[in-house]
Image (cartoon, rainbow, N blue to C red; front, side, top):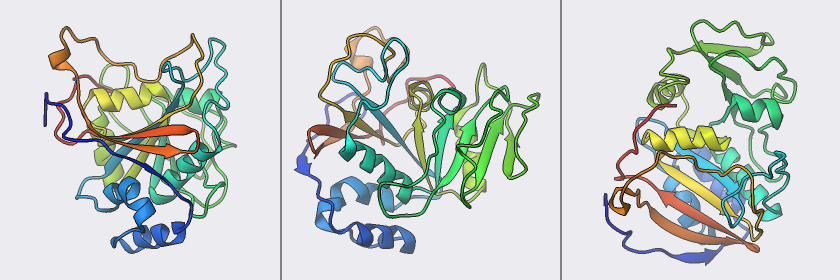
Length: 265
């Protein structure tokens, strides 16, 4: 409920067995998941008419996603990286901002777990990304969302969609509507922190899987970059469930019923 503390939080260990049953349930569009996967993945299984938008953010104990030099591989360990790949496997599409595409050169594939590769989507208002070689692999769709006046250089197999700009970026709900038109029902907003923050600020993020590694970096960019508030009463209080992934912690944040902070992507 808006403005109140969550009724409860829970903690449980996540095992690896039964993953094939999870994939089958998502492929068939329903069903009960194995007990060890139910709390974390059941909320992503049953979706409404509009796409479910789930963010994933890995950070240190002090909220950093990289060092001051931009080095970030790898803050999180193998268990959290495997979880990221599981999220990709159950989502239809994975979204990154142009900064992540330029500097991290992600592949956005499923490599650490069983499953199929999602469509890869880059949000690039000015058409800055020219090298798609890390993204355009295999048979998954590659999509560029860019501005009306951008002149991007893209390979022939990249689909280009244009949206009107809202400030320096796009309205996150316009992106959600576009992805719905393309038939995507579950969308992973993978990075970077600024892109995830814009969706959260606008109230367009349904869930966030916050992965916390037991390290302290001390300085560097923070993951969530949100507008300031004046009083604690204005804080967003999602319902949370806590999971252990090896030595790390995953906090599943459910933003349904939470008010948006306000803003645009």
